[in-house]
Length: 141
Image 1 (cartoon, helix red, strand yellow):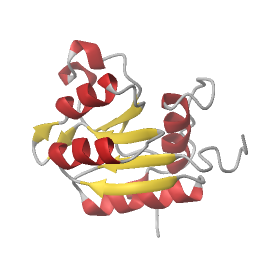
Image 2 (tube, helix red, strand yellow; image 1 turned 180 degrees about the horizontal axis):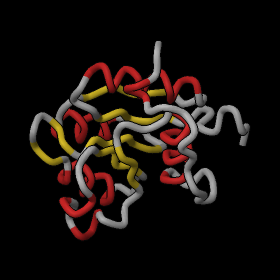
Image 3 (cartoon, one colour; image 1 turned 45 degrees about the vertical axis):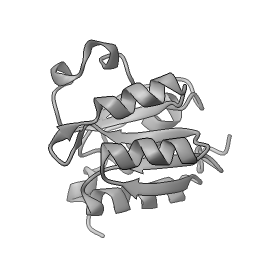
Image 4 (cartoon, helix red, strand yellow; image 1 turned 30 degrees about the vertical axis):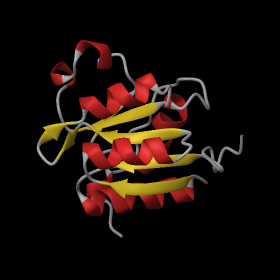
């Protein structure tokens, strides 16, 4: 695996209802070598896209249009598609079966997002994430 492009060639569905955040995730994924699919902004669209595409992983926002995305996580688990929960919510709101799922808190560093995705998708061993640069929301473009 290329350390500068750890997601090289991986097809990753982006499920996020905030277009600016979704666009940023797609940019980060492309820079890491991934092929972003989407973004999609609702649970129904996520399930439809996951059923239509061969995926290596999914970035899944926990709240979509004010509703939790647990139905999407359940669908992905049933299809054995790895996912990374991306959330600004406390871990306690997750259903018990999702509390052990790979997750990252918003906002996060692009490098942490890529590293967490690689871990969630089974592409690298788990290691502590860095906190050396400002979060995505605080970075200048």
